[in-house]
Image 1 (cartoon, protein in one colour):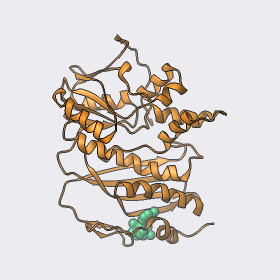
Image 2 (cartoon, protein in one colour):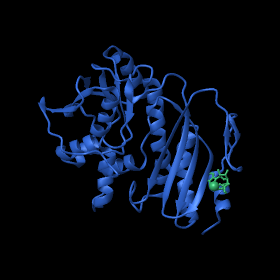
Image 3 (cartoon, helix red, strand yellow):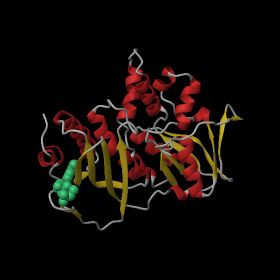
Length: 316
Ligand code: ADP
Ligand code: MG
């Protein structure tokens, strides 16, 4: 069933919020918020056929649209608070919109993010979320890394691009490992809680959206240093390892984006504290190398230099 724009906004996007800092939410020409803290602001767009395949479930599109923005706020060491959404779809299909809204608000509720406005248009399917967070302490920047810092990764990497590969190849076989990998693409888990604690002990961070090597080199550029990482130390999930050859798994882990895990650097003296946080949150923080002098990301495999020919995701 189709319905009009205002019915859609009311039914699927308007949710009461108890947040007293929202002076005006959805319903006027613009929203008004109060903040006595520094604000951290980000935006990211998902376009059908570019960032997700055509038949992606609506719930996954809604969840992912918010998750990728949550990940940016997380890697700054901030707490997400308010967002707006700008959405275009070719027709107002209620079943699709309802699924989208369900996926979006499930994650919004989990991280106590309030939707305070947006824009709804007819057009090719695309979603842009603007997300505003607050800083409770110093931000976690790409530029804060120091030579000699340990390099860590949260969770496991390579899963989401393997998931995307599975979606593209549509293998006849379906199994638990495949659904795990596909779900890692559909429903990335933003590392908000982790980064909020990591920010007490880390010097720099970046979320891995375009691929480890590509994103780590951004961190290195900003921190004016190089890095050395070891393939043998990369946190690969068992699902990735059993579903792909080790060459493919390495390729996904080094150059596949979409996991939205966080790569961060921290002084060696903070190892114990970070191990404690990792155990408490039950999220692995894996040391994969360190920041070095120079400007390159050097990769070792079985203690020998590894020639990396892949690239991170680039639009142009
Ligand atoms: P305007 O034409 O003044 O931009 P709109 O009709 O686009 O107003 O929006 C009316 C109200 O609904 C505004 O508060 C806007 O922020 C909000 N809004 C529009 N689309 C959405 C959406 N998809 N989700 C949440 N709020 C929305
Ligand atoms: Mg508008």
